[in-house]
Length: 385
Image (tube, rainbow, N blue to C red):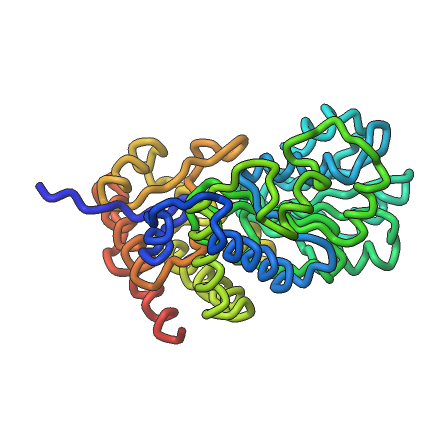
């Protein structure tokens, strides 16, 4: 039996296209190599310019969680207050990070599948003095997208002194965000909408965030201290920690592909393809966890149809046999559905293959959908692309 590669449709890592893989396969050079230094410096400058950042962009070996800690560590100090806005599992992750930092933590929670409003955030921020606010742009546990631009507008008007930290791990490069909206720290990682393999954390810090870091003096953290990395980002011939040479090249190629497509078009494509993908799944009886007005363009959580007889683990195992890797749900949604990513460099062929595999898996698990029904909806939408 010939084994064919499975479509990687989890919410990250996302599929890595050949040109990016080729960069990872290059012969590694010394991190002091003149050509690599130029590549690294150019990459950082492009990231800073593309996201309209008036401060600094950072590219480090590490995960999105590391970037989350980096964000908190550099713009807050023990005893200050932070308001955490959470609409899912990863929004909650800020709670422990901030508590360990010795911050006063308050949490504004939205029911899973929904999000908080700017008005609710305004009301909470008005209760006391806060140094920072955290917002998860897209939470991969719920597939819901926060109204980031509207939150930024409200902050500028009502609470201009509060620094805004945005977790854009499952959003940046797939859901629109710009530093000049009023974001102070934005972070993501390589394996999501950027379409690169895991291994890199990317973080943007505004001029205001850098000034706050400088005002703190020496901080307890070392590896991800802004002050340690700024000299390296501005001149990569300097050393603090060994850069992941091949991953830097891979990210450089990933960014080239994004620029070639155009960021505005990339964001629009994610919205268009998410809409037709969800419509195809709904035609098969699945429902999204996120309410329609809050659905993210980068991933979706699909609940099993009522009375379908589909059982989570057997269904996802069958789906894998049919060629698609999916992810289980987290927290309160565990067992009720599964998660599919539709971000990064995924193309029409992958979307078609995914829906076809879902249809086959349904039938083989005893849920008798009409074969081709979801595909028909998807194809009708893609024809208009």
